[in-house]
Image: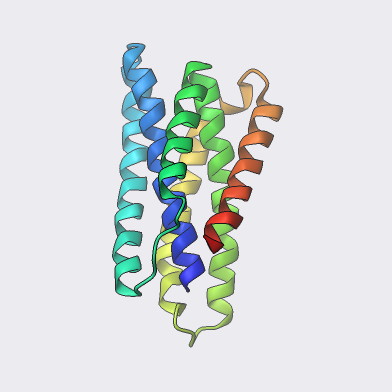
Length: 172
């Protein structure tokens, strides 16, 4: 339970930071349409983060020790991909949300395998959050994520970074 809450909190914290970094660049570049879409997705992530804040307190689980690093890394990733262009920003969202959707799906399967375990009631929350992440991914694809310059390399690097952050945040 502690690992699930810690890593999911860290992921939502980083997601909020990514969208903030992207919005900062897009707003500065007078791109209000994408800034509005990013703000909406950031709002979903902020709601997820707030719920994980509550769960950390409820179950007396400490957040990851690397929260400040994940905030900085997330904001930087968001800003850099936005500076690369709108499609690169969407590629970032697609790559991150693809990893997170898979991560949530594995957690949901694990929780459902032990329906009487202490964390069994968490599965519906994770399912709702996973659905939100899928919607973000689909929006990013619709907005041209797969057409970003260097998409295969960019997405692979971002996905690898997300997977590494997940493993680290589970323990620290």
